[in-house]
Every structure is written in C-alpha cells, then in structure tokens.
Image: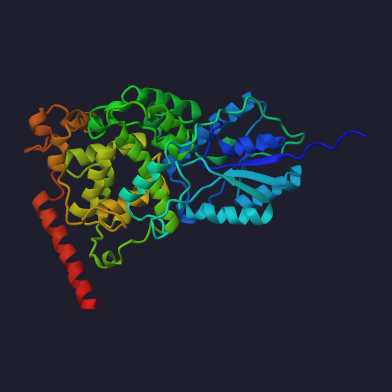
Length: 462
C-alpha cells in the first residue's frame, strides 16, 4: 500500500503579504504541503472595510504575492467571505487541519482569529511589529499609554531578531482548493479610473518594498533633518509597504539602524507604529471614540461645504491644498503636511476629527487603523497622548518654515508662477484659486472659544 498523502497546512495571509521574514509561512513549510490563502472579508470589519485606495493597493500586492509563490512551486488561493467560514471550507476540500498566521491587533481581526480558532487549530506567530502589542508593561504591570516611556521600553528590546530569508521552495498539496479570480473582486477603479497617479508613484508588492528601502538607505542618516521638508525626498515612503506587510519592520531596522546621523529619529517612527498598535489593543474603539471624554462636549461645526473644500484642496491655504491634492492624486501625503492638514480641519474649520479620519481611511494607501486613529486623536487633543487642543498650528507659518514652495508648485499649479515670497500666502490669489476659507486669526479665536465652551460645559455638569 502507498503511504497516505501528507496533510496540507494553511497559511492565512492578511496584512503580511510577503515571503521573507514571514514566520507563519516558514512554520507551515516545515510541517507539510502549504496552501497559501487570502480571504477578502468585508463582513468582519463592517464599516472598517478597506477604503478605495487600499483596495487598489491590495489588488496589486496580491498579484505580486501570487507571482512570487508560483516561482516557488505554489500559488495563492483567493476566497471571499467570512474568514472562518472560508478557511473551514478549505479544510473540508483539502483535509487541512492547521492554520498558521501572523498576529493582527485590529479589533475585527482579533475577533476573526477567535472565530477561526473555533473551527480549526490556529497557530499565531509574531512578526508584523518590532514587539508584540500589549507586551511592554509599566512598573505597575499595565500597558503604556504614553509614547515616550513606551519608546524607551521598546528600545531596550532592540534590535529585533534578524529577519529570516524566504523559503527556496514550497511543497504543493495534492489537491488545490477552488480559488476566485482576482479580477472578479473588482478592487480596481474603472468608471472613472482615478488611480493613474498611484500607478505612477507606487510599485506594490515585496519587490517594490525592497526597492523603496534601497532608495531610503542612501539618505536614512539625514532623516531627522529632511523629513519635515515636503519639497525634498526626506521620508522613507515605506508606510504602505509596512501596512500591507510586504516588508517586516525587522528587515528595515537591520538595514538602516547603523546608518548614523539622525537615523534614530526614523527608528522612533517605527516605534510610533508599534505604539499605535499598543493603543488600539487597550482601546479597540479608538478610531471612533474620544479618549478624553471631556471632548464629547466640544461644539464641533457640521459644515459639509467646508469639509468638501478641505477634501478637494480648495481652502485658500496653499500648504493645506497641496497636501490634500497630493493625497487624492497619489494616495499618500507627506508626514509634516498631514499634521498641518489635519490640524486645519480640526482647529481652523472646527470639524470633528472623525470626519478627517474617515477621509484618510478611504484615500490613503497606508490607511492603518491604529496609526490613523492615534495620529488624528493626537492632533485633535482628544487622545490618551496628544497635542494640546489650544496649540493651533499656523499653516501660513509652517509653509515657509519648512521650505514648501516647490511642493506647492507641484500640487497647486495655479500658484506655480508666484515667487517664494508670495506662494505661501498670496496677497492677491490668482484667478481660479480660492480666497481663504477663514482668516487664521479668526479661526484660532473660534477654536479657542469652542474649547472654552467645552470646559464651561464640563464645570456645569460637575
């Protein structure tokens, strides 16, 4: 009698779309034939399903992952539906009994993990962050809420373990389960096709991530000096690749940590990414609920025309408009400009930060639940660790301070002919460019008045 066919093992891919330094894939490959699976589950996250820009990226990242798997003698199985139901169906089709996956910390993914664990044996591994979320504890045994002590504790664990190489081959199962066709998921925009700028800017996939890292290595040592200058290539632009797990943070750390100069500032940004996951483990509803309850009483304005002007880059503030247009065109925005644009919405326009968070969720290719929520609550002053609301960022000062003239010329062509002295704050806006939606002094006064009203409301309630 011939030996029975070896039992296949499932690798459940989510935001970890890579072969190198992929602990779940390596563990599965050591056990037997591997069935790599990605399930498009829009039910588990409900209103948090991926936005349009992320879905564009996902299409190309899955395409890239499948091509890489085929070079190893494997392929990517695509299923659409609830993760636990689809993985259980694959078990029935193939006899697979074990699922290997990397830990994810978004509340819907933790719920999905619990559901999968009821249907199959689920083996979870670490590797999407520098340290597992929730494992760094204060002297009192509680998770950190403030970034600075969190970062000090994280640095004590660094460097992370060296990244592991991708497997050289994978054993295929004797029977492959059914798979959807990627094109049938309709992740790409068609009518209209608004993704031309993203196609020009990005190369999703593991190879694209490594190419982006190689570029960044050349100037990582000057990150601290250049990261706030939107007219220069001072940032890493690795955030979407990190979000989709096309490269591990450990890989990046080991490639740049010894660059010298101000690279420690960049390493701190990797630490901030870990910090954001640490926050959402403690506060799963951080993307929708003020961490500081007093801000539930802040009298936000409900003004859709102002929100639309902000979204379209038509506020009359050149640095804000440049950032919002860059976002719409490329699915990304320079980090300093993100802070300026977010602060403008919250404090100049007095619009609830959740409006901006939802817009970024739909339009950013690196739309990450933890980072997006933490950054917006930091800007709004509502977070567990945040900037003070009464510190109103002045975009007309920030723009020349960080030498944004070239950036504005690129994204606001109506102003491209203006000299540096005028482009940050045109005295006479040229035809086709809007006047300021509200003067800065008036906006600041309105924001501070709203904050005072919130405090008075709290005292009255007390």
